[in-house]
Every structure is written in C-alpha cells, then in structure tokens.
Length: 114
Image 1 (tube, rainbow, N blue to C red):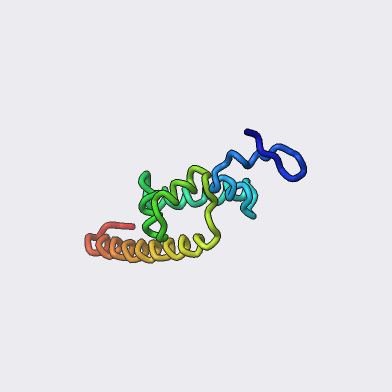
Image 2: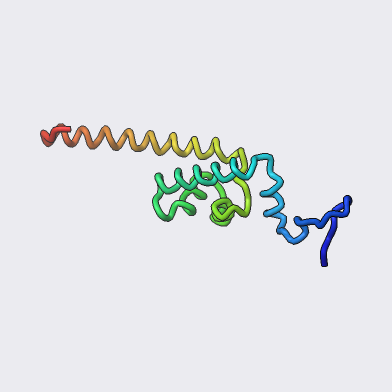
C-alpha cells in the first residue's frame, strides 16, 4: 500500500524504520554524519584495534548495539557523545605518557640509547 504526503506525493519515508527516519532527518547532513561516523571508527580502531566497538561503547557509556547502529549508519552519533570521547582520549593519553616515562626510566637504567 502506497502512502502519500499532504501534497499528494508518494511518502518515501513510510517504509523506513523510525531509526532510519531519524538518521535522514537529523540536523547534520549525511556527509557530516558520515564524517563523524568515520572519525569515531578511526578513534576506536586506533585505541582498541579490531574489537573497538564493544570497548568504545564501554568507555563512553553506551550499549554495543548503539555503537553498531552508528557504524552501520542506522542512527546518527548524537552530539553529546563527543565530549565523552574526548575525555576518554585524554585519560588514555595520560596513561600512555606515564608508560612512556616508565619505559624511558628502564632504558636509562639499562643504558639503552633512546
């Protein structure tokens, strides 16, 4: 059964899931949404490797299914996620700095040049 809009045009949204309609109607353009999705995937892979989705979800406090929906373009990444991602990256960066200092100390103890 074909549904129509008030202007008499076929309603192409009628067969879409609510999540897909939300994706298409989000204020970010599809091009922007794709850029955001790619950035989140790059961050996730850089920090966690191949199993980044579950780890990223845990780190920013969302369900694995939510991360999968973002990655499969079913839903857009909500703007309020990005501060959590940045906070998590800052925490990881501090941990890496501490480990680098420890590795340098061990290298110095062993007389290994940097």
